Image 1 (cartoon, rainbow, N blue to C red):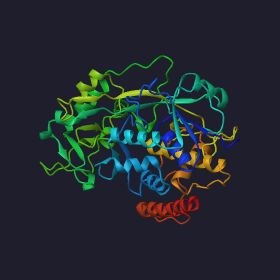
Image 2 (image 1 turned 45 degrees about the horizontal axis):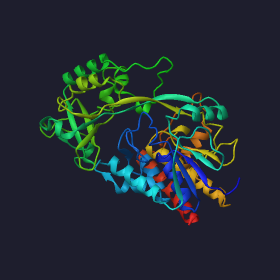
Image 3 (image 1 turned 60 degrees about the vertical axis):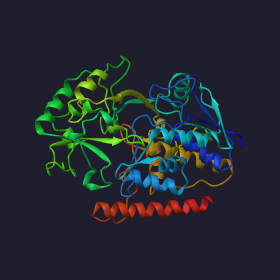
Image 4 (image 1 turned 45 degrees about the vertical axis):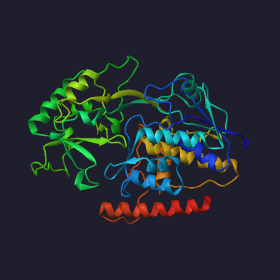
Length: 435
């Protein structure tokens, strides 16, 4: 494999992170992006790194898997995490961003990098190595066929996005501002429900009309993006113990904890847009207006974006990719992002970081970095490459897939703190070795 210009397919989070890591190490990159010529069903703009579902990159606490993963990426100078930090909006203990500013800044940093050449074209086949394929979970057409011809038939599941409403259209007399357990101040809008209001809502939700899937589609849904109406059908109280759980919240007007609470999270820096937390859905648009209008405060809500549902494609990666996301059967060819079986925005960027760093070091004749499953970055790659269960499914980062301690404390928070400290010590050493 020659030290040629590297081809990176896809300018989403994984592709942009991979291209940036390569370029920062002096490697010339051709970043191939099909927009503006063609958009996927999920994209609304031609900006790179567009966040199409939620503006939240989840928890920023080190005792949470996503928080630890982001801190590891900060240590290794991640493009995506640095831009997220620059464009963040209030969200309690979570890292949420102004989506438009975030994507605009990612696009600016990529287009202005002297070692990155953006190619506006649609890839129709797997590129020759050295290359990283980060075309996302909606990869289709001749490129998908080329991938399946080489690696075997892909799997698929369904991913759903939550609706976004205009704050000024909400009835604020029925809504209160607060974060659970007072973490981060009043970063969420909370719509309290009585027991009667909750059950009326759930019964309407269960009976609401959904968008019909095509005959060739199999309804296989990733648990982390379960449509709210499917969740409701599991039992009348499922939502009350799930996304509508009222724990850590008290209505300041009554001093009491509501029976259930629908939370809205700020979606832009100006605080004019809010997404309905946990309300990924496949309801028809008219049904969304009707049923979600039963939520206190949302009776006359103006929907800036309705919830949507789309098919996601991912590889049967175990045994085919290594922990650095390189194809075992073809040296120098990598995949990154949700197409590998990592789930979530920050996980996608993390896989792009690992693939980009590994390919750059290969081209520069440097030894591989052993992240190991003791780090969040390494645990994701280990899961994707080595999962041995009956059915491989997409995975968010969690302490459940990070290697445990030899003599773990009984207290979970103490245990997670010690795992995070061990992980960050390893990552900081890697950062020093990379200088």
